Length: 273
Ligand SMILES: Nc1ncnc2c1ncn2[C@@H]1O[C@H](COP(=O)(O)OP(=O)(O)OP(=O)(O)O)[C@@H](O)[C@H]1O
Ligand SMILES: [Mg+2]
Image (cartoon, rainbow, N blue to C red; front, top):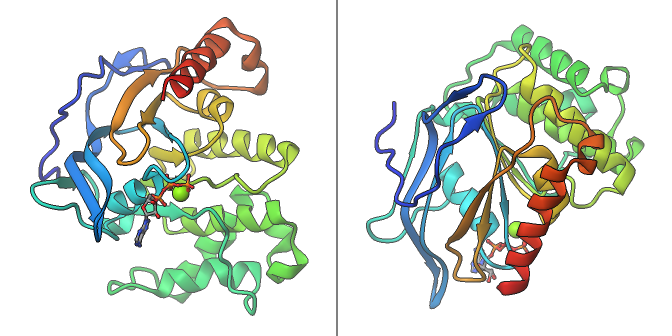
């Protein structure tokens, strides 16, 4: 249930090019969230509504507070004062992919996905279900044949796909990703970008809403429905840009006027900061 879900910023309407409908249902809402670490103010009155079913990217200069914003969304941090974070989801239905895969080196790919499913107070899956879910997630990211490999036997891109599979196996409806492709080469990055879009749109999993922090303007435009540009620290939402591209996306869309116009708008914004 949404405890509180009001937008305090004017962002215009969100247009889902797939459904041709305007959808304003909110999945995650940050309302007037400020946060300081000791004397350092990191977030300054951040208000942001993430709509159900959308792919939203967060862009902003290094150190401005993007990871802190995601940690607020995940509930690892609490806003100061009167700030409110609310969800139309249970905590268990929110998944997180960190910038580095953080796999356990002594466990196989399969075990790395299976074991965390047994954590948490609810233990919602039995052993058989955990095995099934882990196998299914490996299939989704195309790594079923590598299920018995240990992390050191996998490339960086494959390890990141295991981390994505691990997050998906828990069947999140909301996926938070902190620069998931930042450390990858361009070729692997492009491939995983498209794989992620396929998974997001696939009826084979519960995933509905994606929030991704990225440093790449191009990546944010190619993948997202909307992009939240943050100000330098202390971060606030500077502007929200709606991407005028339809779904399904593909890499050739980088040649469309809507793509490069949006990239140009965002670049100009970065220069002004
Ligand atoms: N646990 C912490 N204790 C103290 N300061 C912190 C903590 N976490 C983050 N900070 C500070 O908060 C600020 C924002 O950090 P954050 O990691 O959110 O930035 P970011 O936008 O994600 O940066 P990057 O793009 O480099 O990943 C930084 O100045 C950082 O030093
Ligand atoms: Mg960060």
